[in-house]
Length: 399
Image (cartoon, rainbow, N blue to C red; front, top):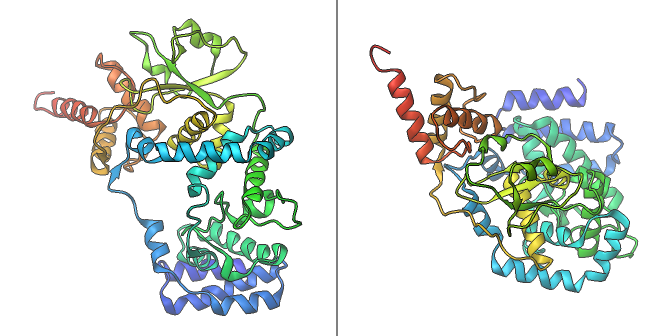
């Protein structure tokens, strides 16, 4: 049996791996590592030290009971303290950051913002033993193949970067260092930023910042282009245009969209899409290509917006012209009810999973438009109630 088959069989038999199965799964991981070219002595030295981490499995499988609002998300991340600290570090490293911008095209404020959001500027890098975490997730079975590959890459890092297993500590999911790179990203994109001849994303801030710049450049960052901007929408705006479609700035301007301060949009041949993450009562954003690059770092639109907004603040910009209104979080049970109700009314939402995604927003926007409501596709308690009422009416006797 080859290493991959051994790992998969172990994972299938174990499901959530029992302690007495963990050693058998590690044998499969060891075979895979040796076949990938990792030194056999290193593998033999590391494997006996690994421990199954039930907490990692618990965190991987846990889902929050409530869906966080955009207002709550920003409140926790764009704090005055984080902005001040970011500005201080931006000033301290300005010369170094300008050099990275010259080389990679990425302005320094974005690197500082990512650093701040990932680890609060190195204040907390994580304490979970990385090899334990990756081995546990590889043997758990839910995403075993992915984490098995990351485990092998982490062993390659040990050999190539001269790191000790004890020093590899980070997030429960195996991310490492100031910029929280997964081992594969570390191995592929990390660079020596401080010129000491070594690459150390855990101990060197300059290595981490330079590696972040290289990673963003590899993801396709366009020099000279912003992430996007807050905008002002005209009265009576058709919020169905927040549908993910890319349109030129000239088309948005023709529809009455202006910069957040009321001035005209820049005359640039740039495509943008519209986001209204808190619905029509909150801020609106036109996001550009570099916003999609930030999504390559983290697939959350809230995260990418926070990076862009924090970067703007670090570079001296002001806060939002129209902050998102405070709103209670929506329970996942309510999201499920919303999705199932929309589907029953003939609005396709894909899988009803309690997760708000583009399909749910499009379906809700279509429902709202059909009923003469503001079609912003924003799921809140009022939207759930409207769908509930419509479903009740549709199911009433005689209908």
